[in-house]
Image 1 (cartoon, one colour):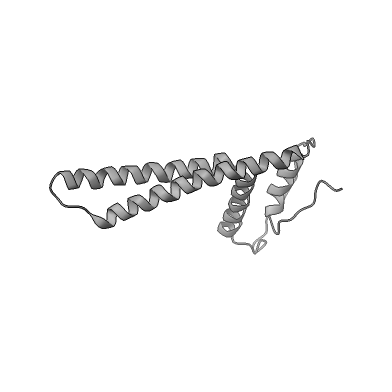
Image 2 (image 1 turned 120 degrees about the vertical axis):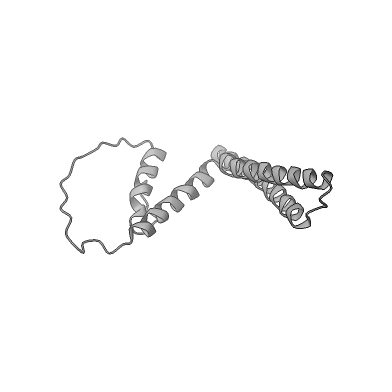
Length: 133
């Protein structure tokens, strides 16, 4: 079995190489190189390259530590929903009426947050089961 089996394409292989080396306990060293950059040398958009690598890293985090990834996002959504809901109640108690749109957005954020936390819990247990095999 090869430990450096790359699934990515383009420059995301660089990040995947570091990830696989760490995952399989390989030793890495830094080797200085000399690079000459020429005009019109790279055809890849740096924004696309950067966000592509960021997306790959976020996907790895969600696979390796799902409770952390989905738990943080879920907690953030839930807190935002609770703050919006508290604002709706404050305005309603002040005699301004119930802002139905804000109330629905608040409920939506809370539901997304709770589902995200439970998704993280379930995926965390699945990941633990795979590690035991």
